[in-house]
Length: 393
Image (cartoon, rainbow, N blue to C red; front, top):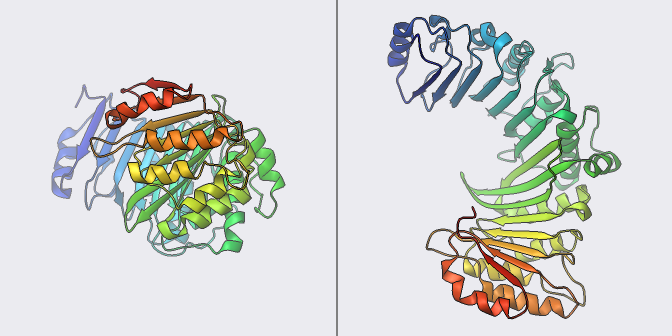
């Protein structure tokens, strides 16, 4: 492979892998290598050592290896600028320190993606086991929330210059109500602040961080193994730092998590909301909309016509109180030929909001909205600008 710069290896057996790597011999200009969906393979038997690749800078492994040979990756550590790993950790107290020690040698690393499966409740680690990553500019960690809370303070990098995404799952490790707010606040502090000692017991620190932060907070729910709902609360700008927290939980707990989000974070600063795939319980959304006084944009995506009626109904006034009083723009997107949010229901919502002098000024219809093209004119009759952008995705 004397002329190969980028190599992809997918769905091969261990025997084929070893033969391939042995035959490859020298790869003097190889910079990037990908291992994807390669069952039963790990770095002990994907011997990168068999290839002479002095310029290797990027390693992407997406096949949930277990166990992972961190010793095998160390020779490449000084030159790595990007590392993506999907691995299963059987013994956290042994394998997690090995991972951190290997990462600690990656002084040029700019991008880090870790997807970790930890089958047992992880024990805490010694405080002196850390990885210092001075050039890190993007980090993404996906794991159960206990693992996230243990690992994040041990990844030492300048969070004021980095983009951070944390996906914390409740699979098998549900939090009780008393612990959830502290855990949510601590995840924000650990992901967005260089003060890694915050324990989450007070809101003041998170509110101070949030006031200077470009952030996105999402709740993803799953039914068994499939994600079927999402809700995103955003306070985004183009400036760094940018922090994204995705909290993954079972569908029946979505309402509780939304409530705790609203109590843990200063939702009055949120400027946009995204609702996707299916509608949350109406009462959950109504409570949420009363917390977000600064929201100007609502995006409803991949929501069926019937579910969209429930979403728009939660925006109607209740007892002379107006949910999301600053709302000005609504974006809708359909999914294939199967459905699209209802402009008819949206128009009814707008009429009721006008009773309290709140006017939505702009509706944008994106992809797959042909099913409601005949309803657009009735919305325009209210003096609302309706933009048809079929290629908006």
